[in-house]
Amino acid sequence: MKTNESKQRSGYLSAGIFILLPVLFALITGCMGSYGKLTSNPDILHQYKTNTLPETFQYYFRGRSNLPDAVVGIDKTYQFQGRFWTKMKTVDQVYEKIERLSTSYPGSNRMQAADILDNKGNRIGIWFSYQHYAPVKINPKTGMVEIYPETSIGKSRR
Image (cartoon, rainbow, N blue to C red):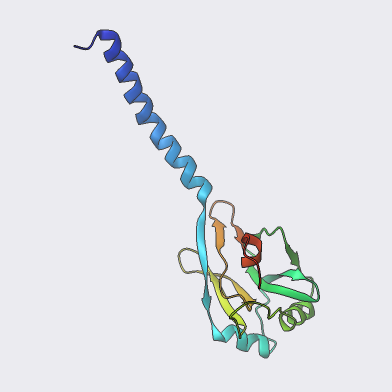
């Protein structure tokens, strides 16, 4: 038979869990952000070839200056965070970097031109690379976009 003291402790424990679970859930979901994706779009490759890439994007490249791994254009309404990404200042740089993209990805024989979509399917940018996949993380509260190409998440090139 439970004593009053053990019943009271049991009640405190239940109340603590009842309060703690929603707080933990809020913390975990708030830190996770949402994820977007790359979706192949041949129209973007056509825009590149006809020098008509969107001017509403801010462009960045990743990799060496003379041999980049990827080029992205991010809608200017978003902030872009990338530890190894370099912002480009001119449109000429954008076309030059896309032209110089590294082709050293195993099993990849064509450049991927893709839309960068948020978790609701809205276009937030464009992607150029011989790499066909990269995780896209979006913080819906701050509008911060992060893209993690294969070489930045520990996979090595062969």
